[in-house]
Image (tube, rainbow, N blue to C red; front, side, top):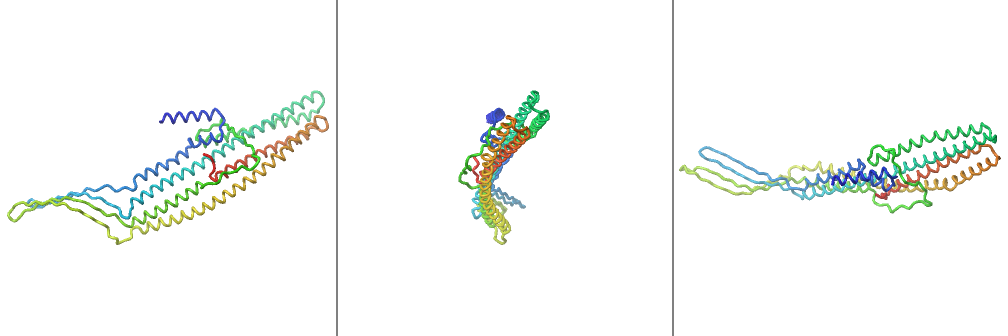
Length: 403
């Protein structure tokens, strides 16, 4: 089993290194390899181990008593006693154990959703870094081609050396600007590797398109949020704790059986031996309320959990509404950039370059049009990334992120 798991891990890791990751592949790798998630899953093992010791009778007790006197007199007693709880405490302990296991599973589910959200956001960040690097490299290549064309025109006497020098300066500046998005891509790859539970890996790439949908993406009907489900489980566990605390006000009673042998001397010097079997029963007297403070503590904890649950439900509802509103606003803004500003900027650049080719204008308007288009292309990428981030947050708030 160990070697099979190790082989599966190596295969998945090699696939991740050889091919660009998709959101689904990265999510699967994160669920399998994230160390924080592996640690969280041990909560279930802890709860199950703790539950295995609850709801059981204590071990029976073996009792012996030996008394010796003068002239051969003596008594020996051997007994076996068992303690039994009152008020169905064993059943209540088993309820507490079951609720603790459910609570651990809810905590793990919440941790899994958090890891999925972090993974998808990290994939988006790396996809955006890759797209920005490609955009800057394209702009640098265009600037270099323009500088070469102007240098050719200078050689034929069609252009002044000042225009050519300015084009060379712009091209060099664009080439140097590639360093920043390249470092951002490396940082995003390391961030994704961290979520995947891997060492720093700057060679990670993703195959994710940051395309903007024509309409706002539909969201599946929201389910019970993982943190709200955790609050529900905490409330149920608190009820079980209160019931168990109340049962502890009635202390255990003890039942035992014993065998007793006794030897004595009569008035004539003869020995007389007797053997007896008996039953022993003991029960504490209800003089003091020993569970009162514990019950009060558990009731206060239950009230606190109920208030936290109500607050979390309200927060979850508001978070879903806020994230939906953000998605709509991000979609409108990104859609306007993609359908209005970006085509207009490209058309303006094409017209400016055509006028420059006809000799109607100098190179300065071309530089300005290129700079403006570059700014709008970056804004378009930023707007699309913001939309996809908001969409992931909306899915996370509604607990609709696919695992």
